[in-house]
Length: 115
Image (cartoon, rainbow, N blue to C red; front, side, top):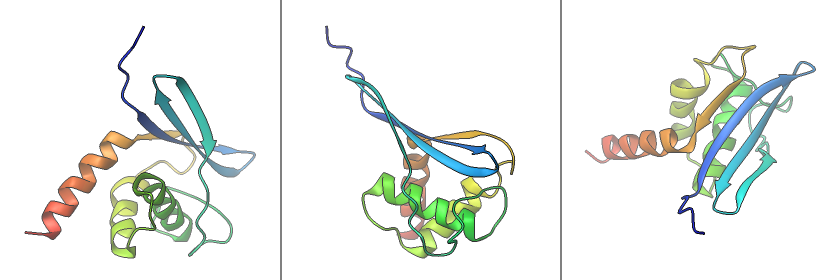
């Protein structure tokens, strides 16, 4: 039986023993696979964080977009993503950001940059 599930992805963050952990969940016809989001270190050698406009959130934004796009994003793009998606999150709350919401934001951001 073919369920016709298109691939979808969700980025889920939580604090484990005081440390920020981000897991990527991928849903396909074959089921769900999960992996830890690789940390692309540029601003924060201490790891990811969220809930403010700092170095940990900048690296988180960069790492999520790199995973989505398959390439290292431009700093202006991941800084804008940080302001829109990462800084508003509760510092001690668990969260999930759906790739569909990211794609929609990327489309509107790209359109705005080209107008």
